[in-house]
Amino acid sequence: METLSVNDYFRRLTEGFGNGWNRFWYSPSDPLPLCLIRIVTGLFALFFVFSYTSDLTYFFAQGGLLPFELTEQYPPYNAVYNPGTLSYLSYLESPLHLQIAHWVGISILCLFTIGCFSRVTAILGLIVTLSYIQRAPLLTSEFEPLLAALQFYLCLGPCGARLSVDRYLAERQTQNKPDEKKYFSANLATRLIQVHLCIIVGMMGLAKLSGPGEIVGAQEWYDPWGTGEAVWWMISRPQSRLFEGLTFLREHPYLVAAWTHLIVLVELCFPIFIWNRLARPLVLALGALIWFSLMLISGIAPFYALIIVASLSFVAPNRLATWFAASRSEPEAQADPA
Image (tube, rainbow, N blue to C red):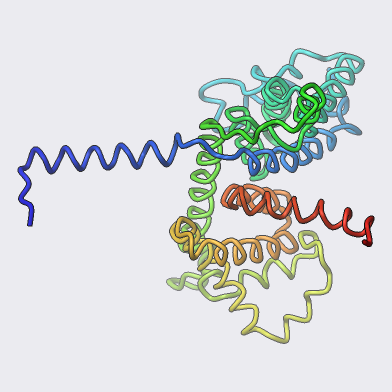
């Protein structure tokens, strides 16, 4: 057995850590998952910005419901800065100017979604989204910060290298299919999404274990996640659920409790077992299942939909490429019966 000196041990330890760190963050990878995330994230950004269309001047015009001064009173920013100063909407009080800026922003997000001038429209699209978030912080929820984070990470990688107008124009220009290049920036952006997702999901699970929302009696703490009743609490609120056919669960309390505990278990296990290649398909399937169920009952469906979108970063690029190739070959096979 080889005997190592202390210096050799720490040298090998730091070299091994450094090599592993570089492989994790900076190995070139296929940008296909990033490009797929770009499309869906762009659609959600369009949904977010377009939702202001009917009330744009009502909220933001001079004398509107959300004057610029009101954002100064919004915590936690009020002690540091006015978030509205970071939004170009704050400097447009004319209804005409607001409408022009609004539709220009929507046009930019459309170009970003289809992958046209992706490097530029990714950055401009992020500015558009942040402008609406910072101009109306009182209207934000869990959805908007995650949306902005995904758009930021897409700015760091070649999100228009595949499934995009940019790719189509490159093929037309070269008269053949470009080489399937791998990019270290694609891996960096994908890893950032993965790590951020694990932090979010892990904190969601820990928050559910952190304790109750109210006190019952003098000393007893009541925790709906611990008792298995949290899912029923969400289902029983008509204003929050998207699907009305779940009230039958009142007859099956054990099913409700199992559903509640499964949510907590998956969210706690996700940040750990998602990094194991053998366990990853099962973890992704369970995660998609519980997040889809929360889309139906939580009242914040866009947030959980974005969680599912971010989880696409864990799908292997070659698996996605196989799925896309199979989807393209089926119409060709149907068109050519021979």
